[in-house]
Length: 139
Image (tube, rainbow, N blue to C red):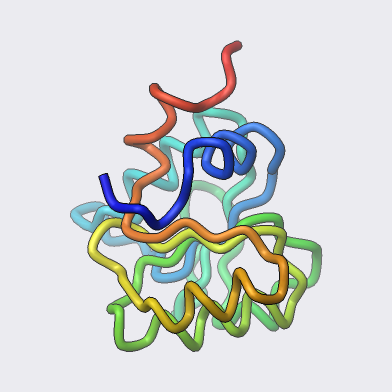
């Protein structure tokens, strides 16, 4: 396992959050974001699709950007290339998200350090659907 998110932080994010903005989520069922968002919904999380096409996914209205989401977001789950992930992390901090989660393969160490420096929880190069059985809340 990578060192980008300790078990306590991961467990707290999984247990204590309800609204997850999934950046990069579209109606493309072959993409990992689609399945992970469905998984999060099945665990009782509200998902918010954030994608340039602002598509409705899994019954939830989509938005083009995080700034357009008209309600508070607890976690920003990032399914974009590492080269663009830092800007999304900065946007997440700007909107007051409690946590930023970079998916497997999404790595930006400078963004990780920036987010944590302002006191926002951060997990990087991990997947909540993989971490849930190990650290998620027990029903």
